[in-house]
Amino acid sequence: MRNPDIYAPQYGGHCEMSLARGYLSDGNPEIYAIVEMKLYLFYSAANREAFLLSPDEALAKADASWATLSAGLAGPEAEVPVSEPVTDAAHAADPAQHP
Image 1 (cartoon, one colour):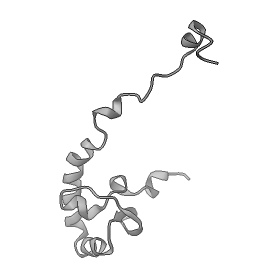
Image 2: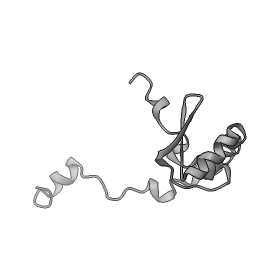
Image 3: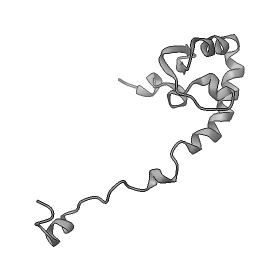
Image 4: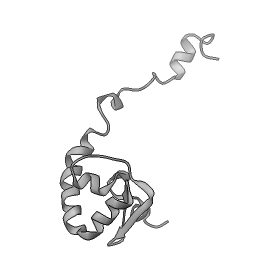
């Protein structure tokens, strides 16, 4: 693919209308709309229909919400590793512990 970003859903795959209303919900890849060569996913068919009634207004509201809501998607715990990486130094210090 020359430009895979154009195939990626907007807003990280979250429902566009939920964002326009100020909250996050997962989008369903089977319920979508393509507007100006961008893919938008929706939680429900009703949300897609609401979007299609006024896409410009919905996108403006979603953009404003996304700026704040997306900041909280990866909390501080995302920066803490689950476990310490195994290094050659650890193996050399105690080979019996690291086969």
